[in-house]
Image (cartoon, rainbow, N blue to C red; front, side, top):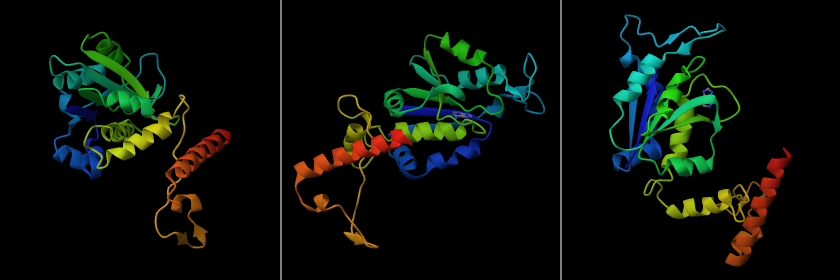
Length: 233
Ligand code: ADE
């Protein structure tokens, strides 16, 4: 069972992980999500987790001492652990990465705040043979912290696990539209449901035809059209 551990100074910020698809998946025992408060590792009166940057500059940097202690505490022996450090300087998250993460045993998310986490945390765990370290960004913008980014990655990853999504056919259809054939990256075709007419707008006739070959062709060409339009934006 895939186990997600999140470390944050705002554990309450992560409470949506109990809801909806992810909540149900945890209740069914399909995955585990554990949330840890970084401040539990502090030993000083003020429970400080950060300090001024060496070399000067604005902002504060999160301490490697508290982060190391927090990560060690949830490290179980034996299995490989994937440590994801959320940072706008990381590799851009995408569906392929979600597929890879869905095959892991335990993923620890280090949700940093401020100017990020002391760089030695990544270096240290990269040197440990039971760890794989990934620095990941969810997009080219700067968030206040890694919490929302971790939730994005968990949502995209967890729905790929067997049993999490009610109808596994929807995953199969998506994988066609996302990884595409011939390695082309296509977005999904548009979807419609009843009523057939709504505010003067009609559902494309081909979808009402019952001709599965024509429907598949139409969806493919719509996916290509949408993909071309995105590229032109
Ligand atoms: N922390 C701040 N900005 C971020 C981003 N874009 N992705 C991941 N973590 C972040």
